[in-house]
Length: 234
Image 1 (tube, one colour):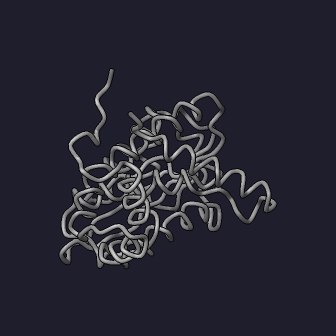
Image 2 (image 1 turned 90 degrees about the horizontal axis):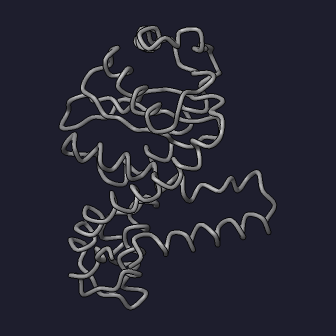
């Protein structure tokens, strides 16, 4: 029987899950989360919230990613959108690469110091290893994508257009809002950890509110919360 990851903590798993979800999912600071928990009668320090998210955030994200990858591999991957966005770390420009599917779900996040063929190739290989091969890959006009697609033999599946990649462009917005709330990042490893964790949390709670009627949205939201409460359950 697997041991519970919460076994050495005095706080209950429910409180830890709530704190981690508030910090990663919403554009809140550590002290904001501390104040929200205080309003609910839970007394923890903001440094405790920092420790919890560093310890359990990647674990929760890994469980979500594992379940969703199993589901996505059972269906045909129609279209992926690839894009990169710059992120400043101590004044140095880094690049956050993303692979997004046709429904806006973030498949893979990858941080590099360069914006070249090897970085694009690494992103493609990581995404295809986990989710399979898509029918079409939409990119911008960066030539690194074309070189990477040519190397893996998928050059005929690439599409480039002025507005075709808006799906990937829009996927950066939730992360940008979260980045501003965190006052940017200090290390590349922290950026990689948070980007991957945030993407998994976003996928889990992204319920297409604008596409569903209110009763359907409420049922999906309840199901997502119920599944969240079961993550890493003993």
